[in-house]
Length: 68
Ligand SMILES: [Zn+2]
Image (tube, rainbow, N blue to C red; front, top):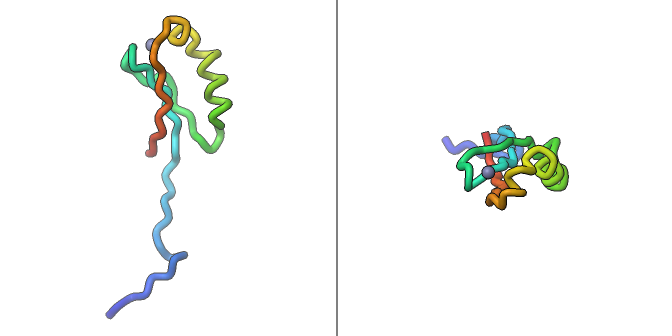
């Protein structure tokens, strides 16, 4: 029997998407922010406020998109 799967019946991806702030110089994740609540602009602002020392020291910061 061939079951016809309607588009709306397909499993929807329900995981959360995060923006991860990673410092390549310290080799660690500085923070993870749910993209649903934090815009890129907000994350850039947080980065400046909370992780200023890394930026001041010229560390390379990556903003990676991850999923749970
Ligand atoms: Zn660093």
